[in-house]
Image (cartoon, rainbow, N blue to C red; front, side, top):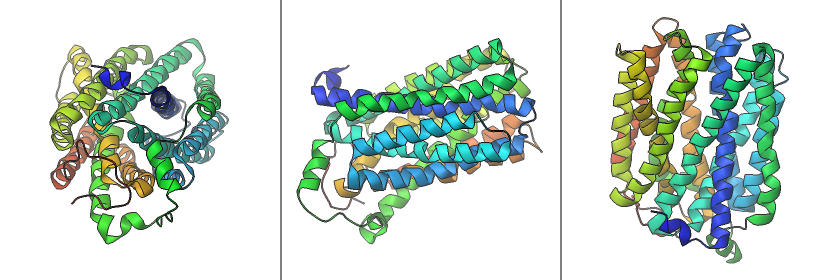
Length: 414
């Protein structure tokens, strides 16, 4: 099961753990907002529309951050860009703890989003380039799975603080804890080299392609299809996870402490989904994997949010909810790594994944606005299921890339 890891060189293993840890810390800083959100609404610091707008602003700016970081990664290196983005998102998460009103929190969370988007762009390219083609899905999928560990850390720490401290102080302390990832960059700088494929491309002396290369005719269709794929997967995911704690407290009347059990089951399902999809992507192909998880995600979110099931059944359904809605992301890094040539791989992945995220950012706002005229669960289910329909369309349009060798500049197959 772990032959792919045993076959890695010491350099490859350090790279794997750097990307794994970086993405987990990224998840921690992002997911704490979902646990802080119902507290801020309860304290009248935010209303539901502002809460959705805040999440949307963070995600929109993360799209610009991801594209910019991808360009930096192509020009200056994957590792250096990863270091910068981790320090950036940690610092502005920390500053969010000092916010005195909605406007200040929007500024700090928005700036945090720039680094949050950039970390995935740099880290996903980095791990994708050091792994053999036959194992790329498994390795990149495991890195993607670290998101659930960061999410779990955010859930545990949030519950601890909100049950032991006054809520008016606890949410600030939680943001202050977001500075921790910055300290990981000291190890990252010393231990992780640039991938050989990137170093070889830079050493060739060929001029760096323009940042608009991914929009030229040879790559434009690839860029559009990959962006649609990212939009659907992230639109569904953010519609669910941004509002899940609020849904449990407002419609299911479950306390913060009680909701930990429900969210823990979702997180456990998420990790299982990431790992399962990581192996399936290499076994059955990227396209079939996306199709399977898109259909499963749409079905389970509708059942979870709109059918009159008991709280006990909701606890059980949380596992497949996390399994499908998170597992779908295991294929994102591998397929985007395989679609773009080395010289523009960072730009391509950074743009596609993050323009998808930027457009998907409007889903939390749409859910928040719609919840003023319909039950929150109905709003979540409607927008999430629609988003997964986009994944199905994109999957039908994309080529199969399983096992594809990473090439220098040449357009991806259509």
